[in-house]
Image (cartoon, rainbow, N blue to C red; front, side, top):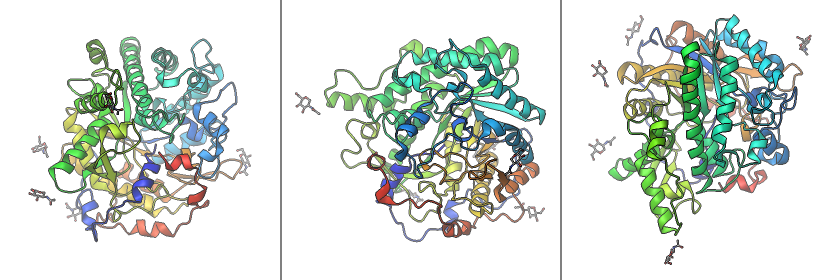
Amino acid sequence: MKMYKYLTFITVLVLVCNGSADILNFSGGDKSNYTFPKEFFFGVSTAAIQIEGAWNEDGKTESIWDHLIHTNPDFVRDRSNPDVAADSYHLYKRDAEMVHELGVDIYRFSISWPRILPTGLANEVNPLGILYYKNLINELVKYNITPMVTIYHWDLPQKLQDIGGWTNAHIVDYYTDYANVLFANFADKVKYWVTFNEPMQTCLEGYGGTYRAPALDRHGIAEYLCTHNLLKAHASAYHLFDQQYRPTYGGKIGMSLDSNWAEPKANTSKDKAAAELYLQTHVGWYAHPVYSAEGNYPPDLIRLVDEKSRQQNYTRSRLPKFSPEEVVYIRGTADFFGLNHYTTYMLSMADGEVGKIPSHENDIGIVRVQDASWPSMSSSSWLKVVPFGFRRLLRWITKEYNNVPIIVTENGYADFSGVHDDARVSYYSHYLNALLHAIHEDNSSVIGYFAWSLMDNFEWDDGYVSRFGLYLVDFKSPNKTRTAKDSARLYASVVSSRGLPADYDPEDFTAFSAASKLVPTVLPVLPLLPLYRLIL
Ligand SMILES: *[C@@H]1O[C@H](CO)[C@@H](O)[C@H](O)[C@H]1NC(C)=O
Ligand SMILES: *[C@@H]1O[C@H](CO)[C@@H](O)[C@H](O)[C@H]1NC(C)=O
Ligand SMILES: *[C@@H]1O[C@H](CO)[C@@H](O)[C@H](O)[C@H]1NC(C)=O
Ligand SMILES: *[C@@H]1O[C@H](CO)[C@@H](O)[C@H](O)[C@H]1NC(C)=O
Ligand SMILES: *[C@@H]1O[C@H](CO)[C@@H](O)[C@H](O)[C@H]1NC(C)=O
């Protein structure tokens, strides 16, 4: 999970202040007695590299995250690494038990590609890797929990990165082979498949920037190549599943896209256009080819990148194009729209050039900021609490993509640890209230919701500083002891009552100012931040 911390960090410097905020503006809706529909399902999410540890055990090889952090420990805020993490490789039985304690219907976890295929290719399937996930799946099924598998949650085998990773066109075949191994071994019990988690983070931040592995920084070129191959890989896995596995096993398959809500900075037609352009060229970059009626990249993206490339004297557009056959091959290749959502930004048109030249940011030419008055106090500075943004985004996706069934595959709040997590309790209450209003008042087509995350975990460049868990993990204890937080009890009560607690107050945001009293275990001191993380 997690978006754009350092972009946000820069925008923090240009925060706008609109005077005192009307707190009701943030609320996702009034006090109501709405409940979640009978068929609506709840779950919790995790990702392999953030919890498993055992990075080199039983035949697993390095992923691009292992490699980046082993070779560049300064990448991580507390100089920690995911070598052991929450040790879920050995503690998966306790994980399944926690999911059971929450009373949710589904557990979404990811499978580590280099644990299954140590060479990256399907010439060698690691039997101990297969066994680990079989054991986990059986443990879930024992509790009547449906497994949902994310096939790719950012941990590419380093051996494939060495030959170009997502910019190598052959990765479409390599990914399809990997997905085939997973379908063949697990499709009998796994009923939901997510081909990719937040592909924009992989391509825009990993290939176009330095914020995610492999931190390639080939902006303006590599993010478009990466996206192009990734979308073809997604479609290829979908068709494989649809033709060869669905007839026997059933099941659903889709993608999980990250999106902020984009609010116009001012009530002007120009800023409204900027907000719409943000959605089209960010979440739409991945969603339009798959979920729109016409397919292909969003017309605005094609126009802007083609135009800039021409002005910059490239002999061809930096945006690769899909053939008409490819447009058809990719269009419609999802049974649901997975949405990972955390926060909201305000958009305006850029005054002149923005970002590095060339880059996706420069190509699009818009500027985003957050309102200083929005509640936050999260350990992740970008994570402003704006429930109405969630509601508006759900309505936008529902309309834009023709009532596609939406599954919120991630939503959550980060703090600096502790089991009495009032801010997280408040965040979930407000966002679930917004979701109830989205379903009941806006007709948004949401069918399921997953909290991020089941437990504290390795939070990428934030290491173990930023905590997203419903369960606290004591990373210092040999057994990585897990303890339910207050938010776990809140979530379990929402799941069992199918509504918000009677004392929930949609106007109360006080928990977020109280959260500021919690101090981080490692103070993020500005001068210690590596320069490359600031110049994103
Ligand atoms: C919600 O339910 C309570 C208790 O049943 C009732 O007193 C209250 O009027 C209801 N509120 C709304 C908005 O329907
Ligand atoms: C935005 O502007 C329009 C027309 O200029 C006006 O009708 C509307 O009330 C304004 N909305 C807000 C929230 O100020
Ligand atoms: C592109 O080429 C033209 C003609 O040679 C030149 O005038 C212009 O400055 C070049 N643009 C860039 C961005 O280099
Ligand atoms: C939602 O659907 C109901 C029933 O179809 C309809 O009456 C209502 O106008 C719709 N509301 C919105 C906001 O689209
Ligand atoms: C760790 O777990 C093992 C096996 O369940 C148990 O025997 C041991 O007492 C635990 N140690 C601690 C420090 O909790």
